[in-house]
Every structure is written in structure tokens, then in C-alpha cells.
Image (cartoon, rainbow, N blue to C red; front, top):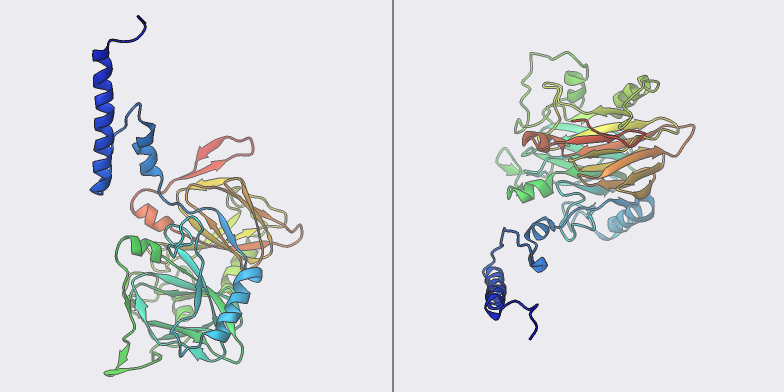
Length: 383
């Protein structure tokens, strides 16, 4: 007789318990329930691991020249305004597919409009911007302000604000959009409205009610706020300045080209609401980030997710150890929680990145965190 075996009476309860647990887990799954407890023996039911194993965005780069632009050109040939009110290409993160999301809370879309092609007005609960890439005739009418914009200009189309897009002039134009639609979708708050009416009639283009230089005339001088206009525009939930011209941003970056800057972010300028000094939207914010010739930022990690679109120059970024080589007009996904550093590939010319971030949404819930790694590898909390 093997005296090392435990008595049969002590083995039976163990076996019975394991069988009962398996039955319990099967019943939970069958009834669409999830167990939130940890067991020390059953690795098949490591509840913490399973709870954290949701789909996550991954670092990724979309190439404008190699992939996006050729597809946009083909779409313009095959899809007309008679077929659809919009013709955009959405960037889908491989880690989140098939969800229409470039990172968990935002997506970028590219749009090409043929000459003199204006789409009908609409409005929606997601907040959005348009950023000009090519052509001088990009057009967005926002709440009665007709805005024609070119490369580097950023145009707001805020939550629940009527707007329509297109191109004016005889050349096609391309712009990119950034929307918080994945976030709004998660909150079950997405809605669209295409029934735009003026004088009891449905029209295909908004009538202008403001001068086309309204945003610049009222808000183009920093530190001074006119008291003779109503600053509540559209639904009143965003910056009342609807267009941010690249000329002003470029001048500001140039003035600080010899500034020390931040070791983790180089020279970074945020687009803000001129009436509050806060971000242009309550959910997402935008930056222009300049890397001086040969500049390399120190690694930065933050809970905010980023969409980074190189606007000038070329270089590479290292996101969670993955090298992503970028050129003008590409888009790069930097998921929240990723370590990221940028490198300007030119020793003589600056590189400029256009950056979107869900930082305001995170700050609204006190969730925003930020860490930096020094040259010696030491990590410190920055925010």
C-alpha cells in the first residue's frame, strides 16, 4: 500500500469541486454572464486576464503616397456626388477592425473633392475638424460662414452644427478629417441630420450669414476679445473660431525655432478656444509639433491616444519598440499607454506633425496621466 497517497475521502471533495466549478463556468457563459473572481488553480478561468483581454488599438502607419492617395483618385473616378453625399476613406486600426476607429476614441478620414463639387449640408453629434493637405480650394461652410482653405488650415465642424463640404475652383483638393465618432459611438450618442431647411425649403448649400473672414476678423488677434458679438455659435459647445490658418501657426513655430522646447515634445503648440484658452472641443484637442533639424524627442508615455499626421518633412517614430517611418501626409496611430519618441530625418530642415489627442475627454474624467523617460532611462511622472 502506498502510504504517500492522501486518503480517498480527501480526494473526492476536490474532484467534486472541480466538476462543480466547470459546470458553474459553463452556466455563466450560457447565460451571457462573466465571473469576476480569481481562482488559484484554474488557469482556464483567469478572470483578470480575460477581463483585460479586450480589443486594443496597435501602433500603425498608413501611407498617403503609396496607399491612400491612389485609392482616393480611383474613388473620385468611380463614385460621384450622385451616388453619395460624401466620399471619404476611413483609417481602420488593425487591432480594432472591423470597428471604424483609428485609435479607440477617434478616427482619421481622407477626402478628395473634384473641382466645384459641393456636398449637401448635414450635422451630427460627433465633433470633427478638416485639415487641408493639397489644393487651395477646399471648402467647408459652417453655420453660415463660408470657409475656403488650403494646406495646413484647420476648420472646425462642431457637434450639432450645420456644415457642408466640397471644393471651389478648377482643381481637386484633398483634406483629412479627425472625428471623435468612436467615442460618441461607445456612449451610444451618435446621430446625423441631413434635413437642412431655409425658409421652409430644403436647400443643398447653406446661405452665408457671416463674412468669409469672420473667424479671423473676430478672433485673429490673441489676447483681445470683442464684446460686440455673440460668442455662442452653432450649438455652443466648442470654440467659436471655426478656422485656424496655417500662416499664423507657421509664424509662431518659426519664432520659437531656437527655443529650448520640451525634451519629450519638442516645440508643441495647441489650438485653443480663444474665449476660454481651453481645447477647441470638449472631447479632442489638436497640436502642431515641430522637430528641429536632426531633433529626437525623449520617450513619452501617456494615457491619451494620438493620431499623428506628418505635414512637413520626413522621419520616423518608435512606438512601443516598433519603428514607423513616415512622410508628408501619412497618419500614424499612437495608442494610449504606448511609449513614443519622434526623430526628424533631416539634418537641415524642420519636420512638422499635426497631432490629434483625446486628452480633454480623459481630463474630464480625471483619467489623464503622462510619464517621460530621461536619457539615463529613469521614468518620471509628468502629469
